[in-house]
Length: 96
Image 1 (cartoon, rainbow, N blue to C red):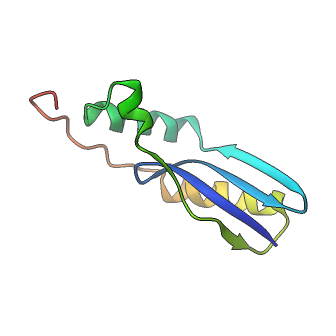
Image 2 (cartoon, helix red, strand yellow):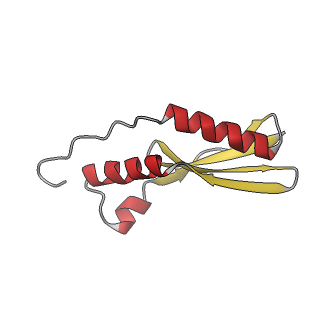
């Protein structure tokens, strides 16, 4: 048994931590997802470091069967598939 917690930028998963068997595994999602987060932030006018950083939040810890490595691999694949296409909002015409 392992447990994991996802870190989100707004509603988009950015990274996660898996703990179990005395080990901690941290993974970031692909560069494609990271680029989509950046594009989303730009479209919403969140260009300052603090505005961008304030959008991060951690989810609750969730238990899942499997060794930490198995959970990390499965979770990475699931999140990459679920967020393969992120709808980027249209940029607001007034810059806000």
